[in-house]
Image (cartoon, rainbow, N blue to C red; front, side, top):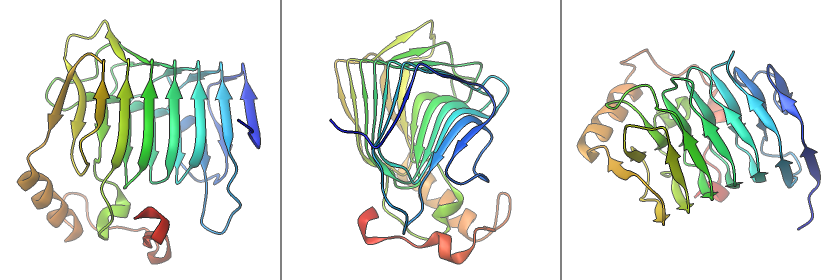
Length: 223
């Protein structure tokens, strides 16, 4: 496979930004905006240390990106936060929680995300409010209707030093395709999700969105 952009064997702590410099508190973040040229990226053999951040890795609207043989150390919120975008893969990666909310969060209608031969290490913060992979949690982009998270695949993945058995937890998301992987796949009741979304859109639980209207547009390729 040919890549336009490649990173090998680097360590990232705080903060390296590739794309929108205003995006996120993380060790490294990547972003893309409609109208920019899409590039296929590879990050291989890197240590991404989010121990002094909210997240190790943040992805905003990113497409066509592969992470291979990386170790991602979580911040207070998680190891990975992906919002919108798609066609992102994690292969032979290790996600290490530092008492984080979850190891990885995929949300904002992101699609075509795969985890293959990965390991999730250490407990997430709470049995009641976390999982290894959270799918479809609320984002500020959800003040307008958009598609659910979908086409997430998890294959040959395992947990290490984790007492809580939740591999995935689904909010506004289609069911993931899970093969030969340890852990339970939980689903938050649809009624709860719909009610929470409705109240958030009406300005409850932290107020309304401050996101500019032009950034809330749902593009045809997101469908």
